Length: 203
Image 1 (cartoon, one colour):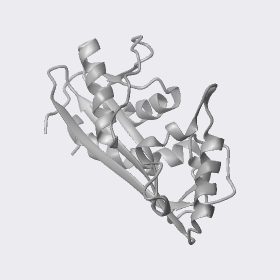
Image 2 (cartoon, helix red, strand yellow):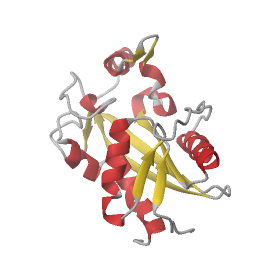
Image 3 (cartoon, helix red, strand yellow):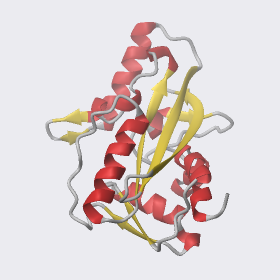
Image 4 (cartoon, one colour):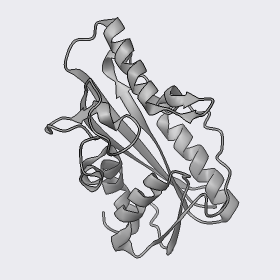
């Protein structure tokens, strides 16, 4: 595994919340985190059919454009009774002409589960794939998961995306009800990050 030896890491996201979460996870490493918006990077088209493919597209595009090591993630929710959907299309389910509407996406998931007569508990998982890419084309891949179930009605106004309908196993709250930083310690992104830490000399 290649080690990260620099002091600046580009995080290939325009999502301010995600950037803040990753910066918090890297706080103890003395690494300066820079977001894609700060570098005026365009968002590349995510044409992959798997999380790792989309993460690679974003990481390599950012590393090539800035000549900095770049970290990208692709993440989403897989619902077993829907054959793993929405999966890599998690954000696409929320797309509207006026931006993303995740309440609409959560309602769609619930309606499709009801139409399918899915039994309870309705098993699901959040998945996260990190790709750390270097300007020379090398990359390292780290995958994380959080198992749980989807619930209805939506609960909580914390977090983002599908958090209000996802209740992780072992917890009474949905991600939408949890304190943001508590969620950040146990989430699929945290699981992937624990593995990623090896490139910073912690593994």
